[in-house]
Image 1 (cartoon, rainbow, N blue to C red):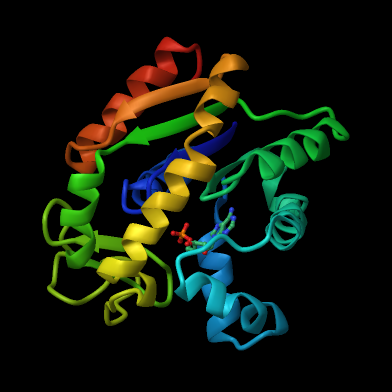
Image 2: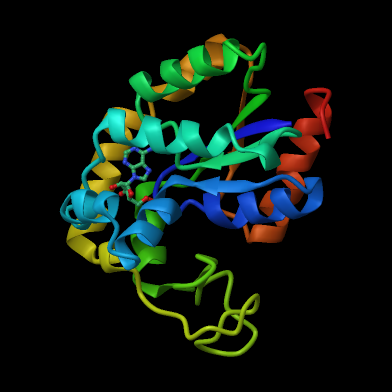
Length: 218
Ligand code: AMP
């Protein structure tokens, strides 16, 4: 199964992607996580994108597309994958489509998590992430079992540098201008599934599974 997770920053894409990756035993590929890893490891790519990401802007298409296609073509992706945060522009979506077509493959579903901006702005200040495995937590609806500690790997949770109020507003604006139009693109292809992302993560997960079953996939 090849899935795309669409939604505003903080809509729950990472959390839902993790659930699905575990259930389906396929890789969860987050473009944001790959960039953050490069920034932490101070690679050339990391140095190139650090400023852009801290401003809440999108990394140029050619950079993201090259990074993601390299990852998708790795052996562990043979049975499918879940893409979290990619594609984010029309150019990225069409590049992905054409690259997959060369292998006779296509995306099965684009899942869009619907969360109003007002709730995103409430969620973000309380968001904590694991610097090692990138798992996100929220004091509002998804707290860690032990405060400040990652459930999965035990690392000390941190606040993401781009989760401050100003950058979140910029990221929301970018989302509405650049990424939200992709919903129409995937709707026209008949593979868009819209799910209410305002509920708690377990309920959202159940709603997605129900929607996938309804669309003939599970
Ligand atoms: P995320 O972890 O998905 O919120 O991504 C964090 C940041 O990485 C974004 O705000 C962008 O600056 C950059 N980024 C991640 N994915 C993409 C993408 N597909 N296209 C462009 N920039 C991206």
